[in-house]
Image (tube, rainbow, N blue to C red; front, side, top):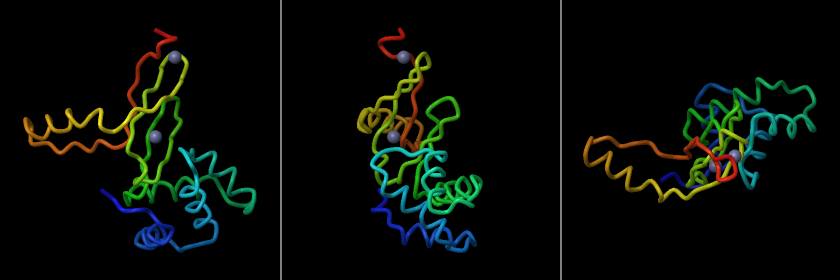
Length: 142
Ligand SMILES: [Zn+2]
Ligand SMILES: [Zn+2]
C-alpha cells in the first residue's frame, strides 16, 4: 500500500523522468492532490489555465501521464474517453459505469478481494486491482 502522496514525492518523480519542476507543473500536482474527488485532464487544464493562461493542454496531459507511470496517480477510463485521475493512495474503490446513460457510481475495494485471492491461489497471479471501471447497465437503463 502506497503512503500518502505529497507534492514533494510528485516533484521527485517528475525529476526522475528528466522533467524540470516548473510552477505550472507544480500547480497541476497541487490541484490534483487537493481535489476531493476524481479529476479529468480537461478539468485540471481549466484550473491551471486561470493562473497560467499560456499553458498547453499537452503539458497537463503529459504531466499526468508521468505521474501515472510513477504510480502516484491512477488513470481510469470511465467511458466515452473520460479519463479520471486519482492520487493512488485514495483509489481504494471501483466504479460501475452505465453504458446506457453514462452514470458512474462507486463500490468499495473489498468487493473484489475474493477474486483477487482466487487469482492468486489458483493462478499464482497477483492482479493489480486498483480503481477499476466495470461497464454495464444501471437500474434505470436495464
Ligand atoms: Zn444508466
Ligand atoms: Zn474513483
